[in-house]
Length: 463
Ligand code: GLU
Image (cartoon, rainbow, N blue to C red; front, side, top):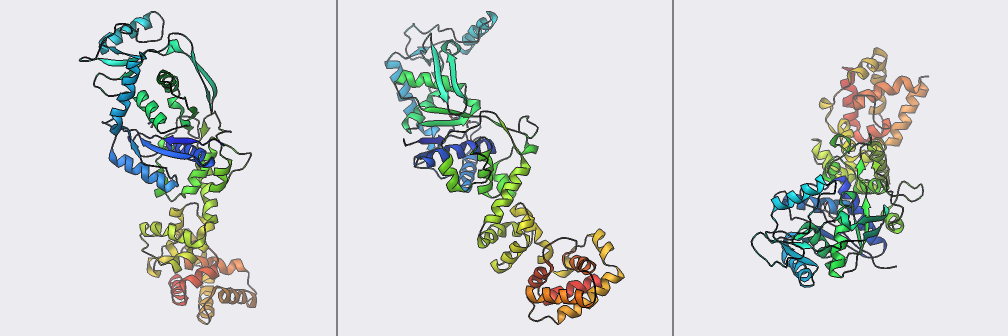
C-alpha cells in the first residue's frame, strides 16, 4: 500500500462546523487506513477575519473528535517567504511574469471580454513585456494558451477544464503577499501531501493549482472534492437544521464517536452498515465509495447514532462523561457511586448526555424540591391511590435490607396478597417517587433513593 499523506487546512474564521469536520474525518481516516500521515495546517492569511480564538476552538474540536494530527501545526502566515521563493523560481524559469496592470485596467479587460460574450479574464497584456519588480507590480503565472487540465477526482470522477477558462492568475499580489492558490500548492508539496481532500467549494481552484504544480515541475497529488451537506429539506444547511459548530454538539451532550460515525456515513458507505467502531472505519475507509451527490443532514439519525454509542459505553466511562452535564443542570457534583446507578436506570431513555443528566433530576433533588406534573398527580393521587401509598409505606418501612431485590419482592407480595393488579398500585407509587409517570424500574428507584427518602416521598404525596 502506498503511503498516503493527507491534510486538513481550515481557515480560522469561525468554529469548526460539521461540514469541515466531515472533511477532516475523511482526511484523517484515509491517512490512518494506510498507516500514513495526517497534517493540520491553519490557513490564516485572511488577517481581518482570522482569529486565534477560532484556531484554538478548531484544535479543541479536532482533539474532541479524536482526530490527532502528525507533526507540527503549520500556519500559513509564517510562511510567506517560503511561498515567495517558489514565485521567484517561476519567474526565473519563465513560468511567471511581472504585471503592472492596475485593478482598474484588469476590470476593464474583464468587462471587454464580457461584452464580447467571453468569460471575464485578464488579457495577458504584460505576458511578453519583460517587466521587472516595481511599485504596484504583481506576479502572474504564464498559463498555457491551449489544452486541458484533467484530473481524476476521488469523489466526482474525471474532471476536464479547458485552459482558456483559466487566465494568467496572480500568484503574488502587488503588496508582496503570495496568493491563496500559490500558498496551497507550495504547502501541499512541501508537506508531501498525496491526497488533497476538501469541500467542493474548492473544485474550481484545483485546475489553477494543477497549473502551478506543472509550472514548478512538481508531482500533482490526487484530489477529492466532497459535496456539501444539505439540510433535511435539501436546501443549504441552515443553523436550525444542524449547520452548527462541533463545539455546540459537544455542549449538547453528543459523543464524539457518534458524530464521527454519523458524519462519515453522510457521504460514504460500506455496504449497508450504519454503525462502525473506530477500528472498522479505519479498516474500511480507503477513499472509495464516496458519494458524489450531496447528502442531507438528518438530526434524528444523529440522535439514534448517539443513543447507540451511549449504550455501548462502559458504565464508569458513561458516568464520568455525564458528570459535567449533571453539574451544569444545577444538580451538583455527584460521586461516581451515585452516577453509575443513575446511568443504569436512565441510559436507555436518553439520546444524549445532556438529556441523561437532566433525567436524573427527580432522583437527585430533595423531596421538597421534587416537582409534580399536575396531570399525573390529579390522575393518580386519588383516595384509592393514597390508600395504596399508605399501605406501601408500612411495607417498605419493614423492608430490610432496602435493596432492589427485596423491594421487588415486597411490592409483588403486596399486589398478590391483596388481590390487586400491578397497574392499580404502580402509577401512584411512580408519581410519588418521580413526580410524574416516568423513570425506571420502581424497585431500582427506591433502592437508589434509600428508605428515608422513599418514605418521605410517599408521605409528601399523601399530602
Ligand atoms: N482553507 C480552506 C478552507 O477552509 C481549505 C482549502 C484546502 O483544503 O485546500 O476552505
